[in-house]
Length: 474
Image (cartoon, rainbow, N blue to C red; front, side, top):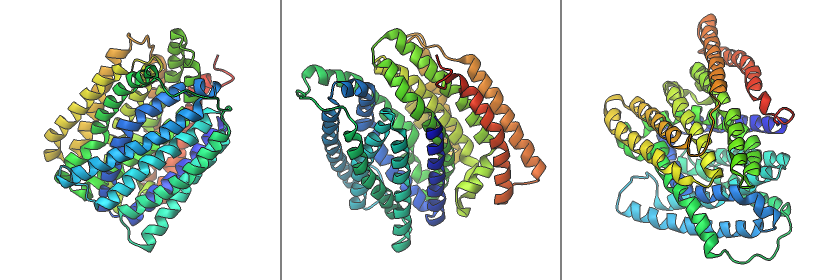
């Protein structure tokens, strides 16, 4: 756990540098363009690749024990080439009929989207699999190296050529390519010896399809709610306002993702290991422990981010983006809902009942788009944030109603209330500290308030996680 925390802390510092440097060199308009291409990439990744990745995670330990993991993963690499071909054809078609304005030259669009679909996916498959094999040191080093080399490459490219989204994303892709290749080599070397494996049968493909299609449809609608909306609002808000909204939202998203990655890096391998034996009782117990570790801690993090929104903005983005602090709270609410939905979905993945994910994600996407059309013209970017938050709440209510009894889930209500109460204390500490300091306009005073609140946060965080650490989790 210490290795993971230290590694994720270093990763967070690097990501902070990435965001700080990006918002220093890229103007808000370029950040808006960057968000559009990120959304386009995310659609193909979520719809075509994410469901297969979930299935691989679910079956990996069983494959490795029987010596079949390398064969199936090589098939996955071939599948990525097929996905990139689908992406190329569809992007050219959409660009020619002017359905969406990507604000990118078609050559750059294809290079960045397809390059990311292939190499970022390989990177994010092979390197996290090292963690699944409990090779946490190598996992941490390769993760940090991917970010670090990507940052340096992006910096050099925008300095040598021009500060545009194209060159920034190309630099990040270079880091992904280099360490995707290294990660695959190290990962394959650690797998159990490969045995002769027959080609997947019709039964295997049906099992994969039955697992994957509900996930694909669900995450497709989830993409519409979480990223696809950008294409609908860019004409209303403009690229610059969209860039500011994405920056403010990105502060929350980055910090909540950092929290999520620390816990899921540690708890997800144990979760998948416990559910691999197909015992319904064991699967329910595994999810109960998983949710009890993550949900109360999430409450603590969300309250902390709301309390420190102005100070975090001061540190994490450049001077031209300081007004983005007004959007941080919307990011906290929407990303918090996303993490909770992810916890719920783990139960559906464990019990191979992924069709239960469909309706909540369809409902969330529908609410989001309808409310954006209603609120964005009158309230601008705040209308988008409000719509996203309400859509997240609607999706969670639907998930809870559909899954809590069907999948025999038991939510840790008492622990969640404890986490929320501790979070409220942190919110009060941040508010009182800001009043005591007079203001936190300078980096020094903002940093001081973050440190003081952080010292209060750490023991609370540890107290919530303590029962689920190895020596205490029975």
